[in-house]
Image (tube, rainbow, N blue to C red):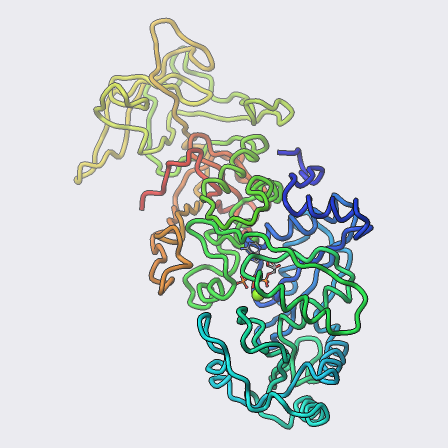
Length: 559
Ligand code: ATP
Ligand code: MG
């Protein structure tokens, strides 16, 4: 992974860069112009990151342009909150746009192009109901039927379209359709609807329009108006390319963008559909669009993912035409690699068990503070002071009264090293009435800080914090939000939600240096994983931490 920004990395060669190279060589294009066209009806997710890295990355690599275009033709679903989040997320990922555009900027021109199609006898106002239109459309195996309104005269169509525009038709009572071929093997070519009536206020054009153009009509024309050379979308739009080309061929516009399709990113155990994400948020199943269990860009950010790790993920998955499902582990290993290199180390005990060093203060066991490196391989990260006293906390999972030889942690009458500190031997323990261990007594090996001592072979290393110099903090652990690898395919995807995917630990004990952790800081909690300061519930000097990823892929939360 590239240091710090990663932006200097070129996109690895793929079929789209091959096409661009050919286009530049043959002179078909002299520069590259792309766009990223989200519909502002939700927050961006990891699938969008793939498209962002590709479109903005191509503009960067070929010194071209990339517009951020809001595909805002569905007035009901759009919202300023989404617009703001989209800009924020694109910038956070490390990209800047050449300009911001909106499909709605072109509503006047789109209307005139629709009139042009009517004039050419290539569009008509249909008054079939939506159900009838569906019925007349036919199926994959049977051709469609012509609408009885298909052969209206140009002048009649013009008059009716004007009526649509003037609000003289109720919603669903009339629409404008392109006149192409009701028997086409491609259903999208069977006289697709290109304008419909919607009495809804639009975020930008307010109540100027009560007719709105459809995606297939809008997208190609917007691309042409902006001089886009390579218009990249996902594979499910492959058939629609015919319509894309048909529209541009039949209107008077000089530029000819081309559409190319790549596979969608599908990630195991996650949802990448804004509609479904919206449902999770609305139903209160998650804590907003930035819930750390969501693979939205804002969720990943709150989870502690860095922009570089997400760009690296997109680089590793590549750009192809083969649909596939990527394992969650592939995303996790990108952030693990990044944080392994950059995150300072610290000690945090998630399930505290008190341990008393009975001989603390006796000869050879008097050192109560020492400097430890913040990063094992990066001296530039400096050192910090860590203290120890007679009472410490260890993790309850690191102690057993008895265990076999494979157990590399603390057991009675055996030795382990306290990370960065003494070797200790457990000598006894106390239990509550339920038989749970509540206190361990141990003895430290004199003069054993940071060195081997003859005759002592600690079995392993465990982490700990000074009970007299630590603070209590909330730590959030996460598991996959879904119980099945492909929740998007489930009939009722809400029933596949893992209701135990969040585990809140209220009484973790953290070393004192973590108290100063700031927003945006990430740490490796030694032997546990990578954790970041939660941004939503941030209180100065009382940070709450979110699990980014465990150190090992196989580790899961135990609820
Ligand atoms: P959603 O179902 O989440 O609304 P969408 O494709 O309708 O998905 P848009 O906002 O229209 O979302 O997408 C903006 C751009 O991002 C489009 O060019 C789209 O192809 C791309 N995109 C969206 N999801 C993915 C994905 N999973 N993988 C790759 N590209 C994607
Ligand atoms: Mg969409």
